[in-house]
Image 1 (cartoon, helix red, strand yellow):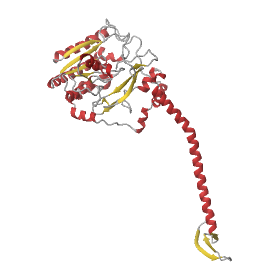
Image 2: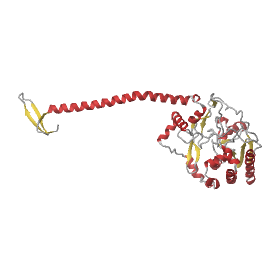
Image 3: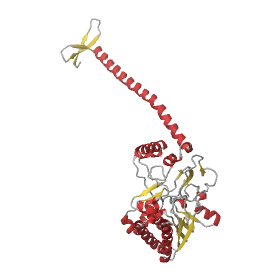
Image 4: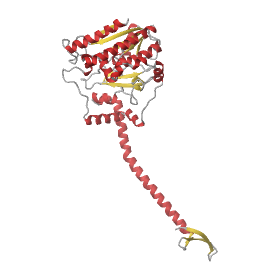
Length: 407
């Protein structure tokens, strides 16, 4: 009802009444307008009440679910031993560049670096340890200053599965009085170690630079670098100052939805989806050598890797000498033994190629540059030592068949 001009009149009792003309020419009492307003308010209040009831019902159904999910997340974080070791490695491992994990990616070099001044709990195959980095992003105590020796390597030097006090560099410090700096990182290979060596030669000026080489480094190189990058390594022309600036102030490049990776339940869901898809990593057949040995035993793969190795050492050795440092090549080898049936037997062609080629390459690098080439035969892996020390460096007592494997 649309009202227009008001009409005032006085009733028989002297009271004043107001009427409005409507669109169709009829008269409407002012009281009708009040009733219409009250009806509108009642309808609005009724709609608000319906919305409120709906929200209360949704909350009543969602809150128990959210509480259950929060409790499950808390249990997973507090008791990692409740899940099988293979599942635990998938949901607790911190070896990625995802939010909450220990690495970030330097895009220009496509190399990963560890977050500086970062602390978290690390897990792999049932082993749990503290991961804590210094201001440069390496695993060293804060009181270590002016190290005399910088030790480069992969997981065996980083201390995969053990506390910092049990790492190789820490043992040099505690048992031999050598101020050793741990520059090892899980899964590092030749090209990443070269970048780290260039950085730390300038930043720390050590007297000794130890570069550790293991058999899987050559396979990792093939996986991480393109063929043309192995043939002509772009890292030999790296701008060290620019790289140091990027690493000193790293930036996380993640979408908001990727923050869900911090949740153990989210990782468990991702693992379930992956396993349901049937996409599993192919395992070598019984008696077949690991895939990384192909980079040593097959000539087409070995030759580019060997040339890369020689070029990197040929570039790094004079740079170290210019800064007053001795470059030491430490070849970690398994000797002439068969490792748990996985490596080629000593008398086989693959076994001979593996041993001869890796040792010959170290000798050639020694002949080409005045560097020390050392060979250390690893102890038998049949009964690997348990991580020493009281918790948090401990072996979770569940599914003991799987062991932490060096990467």
